Amino acid sequence: MSPVQLTYEQLKAYEGQPTGTAGVGKDLVNEPMIRHWCEAMGDTGPAYRGPDAIAPPTMLQAWTMGGLSGHLDRSGAYGELSGLLDDAGYTSIVATDCEQEYLRPLRPGDRITFDAVIESVSERKTTKLGTGHFITTRMDIRADGEPAGTHRFRVLKYAPAARPPKTAEQPQAPEQPRARRPRPVINRDNAGFWEGVAGHRLLIQRCTGCRTLRFPWLPGCNACGSAEWDTVEASGAGTVFSYVVMHHPPFPAFTAPEHGADTPGPYAVGLIELAEGVRIVSNVVGVPYDKVRIGMPVRLEFLYVDDELELPVFRAAEGGEG
Ligand code: ZN
Image 1 (cartoon, rainbow, N blue to C red):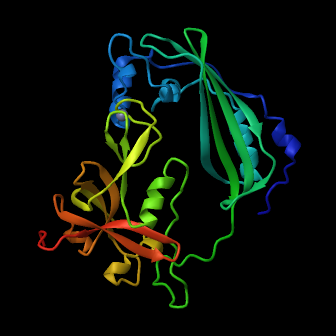
Image 2 (image 1 turned 90 degrees about the vertical axis):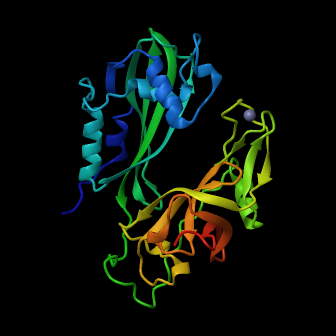
């Protein structure tokens, strides 16, 4: 079935069309939701507690969400646009990013209302995933009638790039190169961590304001809000705080080379509590996946993955429970 031809003008016509008008938040801004959010995010910021508490700004979208019962007042424009793109062969969708702007703090008791429009539809773009169009939706959020913030949400509707035939159920043919392990996303907030890894040092961030250690790396301190930090090098000692065993789907890139396996198989992902008190998600090596146990002592080492990637992993210590 050949896809329907689509002009950019047809898509552009949806810019500015409402996707929801006069939406009303299901709950007033309230302390219980703020507390649950802070607990889930591990955010202990003092501004979010006590009689003058405000809501964390990043909760903005939460106050507009319809929950399982949904909202009844959505317009059909977004569905129409989506349908057009489906018919033209752009049948896949991925959320790419979101941007928020905060105009006024939200406080318990504020009544939330919001309107949303399709802000823009991009020209045809080709990405690693495939070719398609980015759709940006903008939601304007008000608190007791005053502008409180803006939430932009972008998706890519795309036709997936052609893939080689699926062979996941069979052992890999010997001539196929080993699948590459995914590369870490390195940005200015975590570059220091990866520089440490390159030098075989596991660096923990330390707030120079209040000395609180933090991991993974973040731009600011959750305890005191300071953006100043230095690092301490982990001693390398730790214990398995928790773990899961990945069985399915099989990822060839995660075939545990240290187990000598040739086909994708189960592997253990551990949440390791370092001696310094912070926790890191990593692989547990040197022990079969089904022998990993909570409380097992482990020791840091660096796994050579390929010429461009080494990773901190944790080897079950000698004498650990077997
Ligand atoms: Zn601090």
